Length: 95
Image (tube, rainbow, N blue to C red):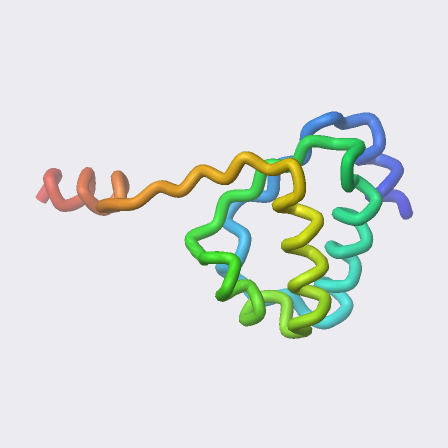
């Protein structure tokens, strides 16, 4: 509740690198609750290397994952980047 109240004042929420670490069942449910609360009231930016079809690996529960993705993609602008990693390319050029 404290975190929820703290986020209330923000109009934009950024969740960076979603999917690197799987959520526990409780963590998935809490994030779903937050995103449901923010649905159509806040702007949310999420970055991830995973396609939506792979999010079941992160959130465990397929129904919760489907509901979460449904809320996120409604009214969304999805930007997909393909190609070589800038960080990897830069690191390789320095060697």
